[in-house]
Image 1: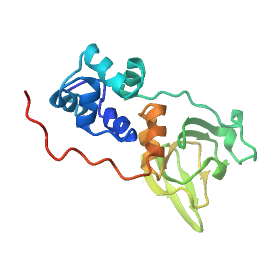
Image 2: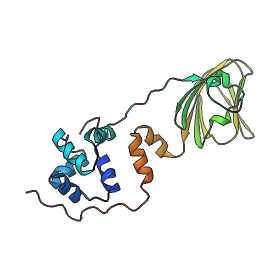
Image 3: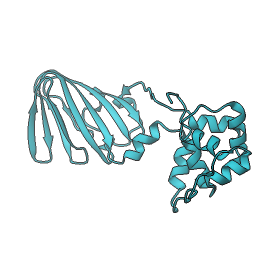
Image 4: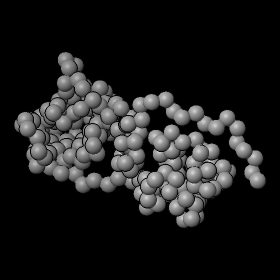
Length: 215
């Protein structure tokens, strides 16, 4: 089903309440097949069906719909690096335009010849991509040097101490990708669902061993 809604969130919510599909069907006054097809995104439920499921989950219908809404796009405006609330001054931060997506970041740098960018405080537990748009750049990673020219790219562990120095007037983009994939997933989920997933440390509720036959 092609939809901007993902009702598999119902599975997360019912498991938080120790409910099987059978129990949810009974408490909502719906048939098992109806609830199962909604939870597995096989059909687009009616408002009446959502009202019933939300009631059984002890939440409002609007809250359930909000959690199910797919957030396929996140949009951010980049800001000047030296306008960010950073405690420690960092070399070359004023040449950076930074877009922050939680712990993920996209940074565009425009440097004149000889300018150095060393902004380790912007890094968390991430991997880093770099794409040279124009010019030539020397990248130091730990004790090794890499010379990169236009349209060259590099990928490395962003936790390693590193810095960029423009060999000539240059423009490049770096992307910080969190190593924990759940951080990226959370950007496209509702905040309440993320909290529910983070709290769910117990064993999952077992599914019903057999599906009842439709009446």
